[in-house]
Each structure stands twice: as C-alpha cells, then as structure tokens.
Length: 255
Image 1 (cartoon, rainbow, N blue to C red):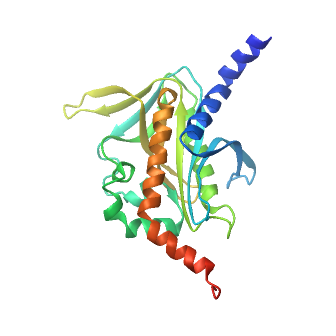
Image 2 (image 1 turned 135 degrees about the horizontal axis):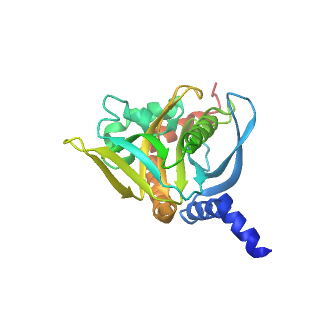
Image 3 (image 1 turned 90 degrees about the vertical axis):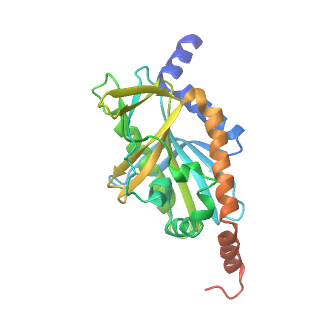
C-alpha cells in the first residue's frame, strides 16, 4: 500500500512541490505550501503550490516568489526570440510590483542594472510556453495561475502590503525544457536548457505583462540560491528608499 501511495504522490506532483519548498528553505526563504489566493475573475479561492518569502522584519520591502509545480512526462517548449522585449519596459518585465516598488526601482535603475541580470533581460526571452505532444493548454493554465497569484500578493489588502513589493512568478517542471528559436537562415533551432523565461500577458489580472521564469527541478537548488541573491541585491540597492519610508512610518507626526 505504501508503495502505491508513494507512486500516486509522485504522479500527482506532490514530491515536486516538496522538493521545491525545500530548495527555497535551504536558500534562506520563509516558505508556505498550498497558499490560497483570490481569483479576480471568479472571486473564488485558488491554490498556489509554493510561496517563498524573503524575510523582512520591518515590513517595508517585500520580495517573494509564487511557484506553480508541473509534474509531467512531456517536454516543455519555450518559443523564443531575441526581439521579444524590443521596446518593452524592463521595469514591467522584471517582476510583478507595487507602484512604489516600480518607482524606487526606476530611481535606482542605472545602479542596479549592472548587478541584476534579471533586470537586464539578456539572451533569448520567450514569448510563449507550450507543452509538446499535448492538446491540453497546461502551460497557459500554469502561467495564468502564477500571474493571478502574484497579482494578488501585490494588491491583496490595502494597508497590509509592504510599500515596496516585488513578486516573481515561477513555474517548476520536472521534464525536459527546450528553447525554440529561429536562425537568421530561417531554420528552427532547438536547445535543452535548465531554465528560461517568457513574457506573459493576461487581463485579468490587471493588464498583467511580466516575465515568468521556468525552471527544471534538477536546477532547483541553484535557482533558489540565485533568487536569494537577487533579493539581497534588491535590498542593498533600495536601502535609502526603505530607510526613508521607515523614518516616515516611525515619525510621531506621520499622517
């Protein structure tokens, strides 16, 4: 019986969720599993597999990752182009963010862009994610799920969201990830990768237009460590903004 239950757990993706949560915990995040968010279309509660939060004891700068885990045998294909982000605002593509967070990032853009590859968006960026050999649009469903969950975390309750709030949507897969692009000669080029990202548009939620990262499960420890480094660099770069906001919050005559 235990063997059968274990097989079922693996097939349903629960072990992938556990491994994902473990990788983020090891990297220094506070992790919640099976977190609920409110779907803006239906107003019903939905579940996101893993919610990883970078600790912030003052509650001014919130940095987190919402993760959808997809256990499947069929490979995933990122349709990519070097022109995906041509003319597209890097502040919008970086993450889902509160208005104040995007403004602070814009103020420090020149200083931060040198240390944050996620902000520069170099290399091939996807414009769509597909699951090969499948008629089901599992990729779109996963993207929509993390998009709505990220949007909810940024906008959930007035007055209870950090002033500067960044949420990164992530999809973790345990089957091959393939980058698909076209050469200058017009030939399809396929390359296996450990991770990639694609620009996803959705309305609702709130005219969403942010890059979603796709990561293979075999690269989870490295990706979680990279995510923690991004969080640390953001905190270091926005220290002045956070300190100013904290001083205002603690001021006896605030408001």
